[in-house]
Amino acid sequence: MAELATVARPYAEAMFQAAQGAAATGSLDQVAQQLDALAAVARDPALRQLAGDPQLGADKLGELMLSTLPQPAAAAVRNLLQVVLENHRLAALPAIAEQFHRLKDDAQQRAEVLVTSAFPMDQRQIDELLPALERRFGRKLYARIDVDPGLIGGVCVTVGDEVLDTSVRARLDSMRSALTA
Image (cartoon, rainbow, N blue to C red):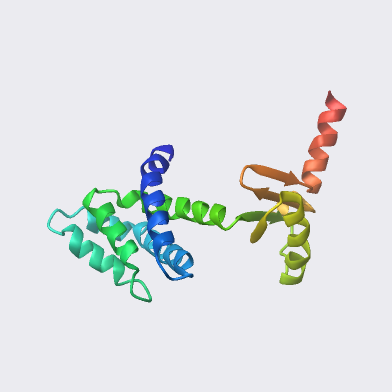
């Protein structure tokens, strides 16, 4: 996994610079959406098998992948895909998309917050929780919600490499450690 991240980094940085240089204000978001769509296609086992066919060139494979997009691809996305395919780096495309998102979030001073809850959360609860988390972490956040009944109650919040665990399970683990020490 670390090897793919190393391979993906220069591609993501170049893609980010190219997208920033585009005149359209929404170009970063558009490029991010297109990269996500291409990354999803690249994860498909049938496409990976097709990519291994020596009779199918990078041009044809690129056309096939671009045809899955709901709208025409940005020039930078088409160029990136062509370079990735010519260099036989299709497996790195999901990592490129992930690193592009990190660069975009850093530039916009935003971050994804993973909120793991013992129970499903409705939008009202999320809207109440996000402002407090934004003050705590000092940046604009957008939420991804996971449910883990093993938490018993409360939430576990992860932003980047910072974790705030206020779950009942964490409290019980802490009490068990204190009592056995």
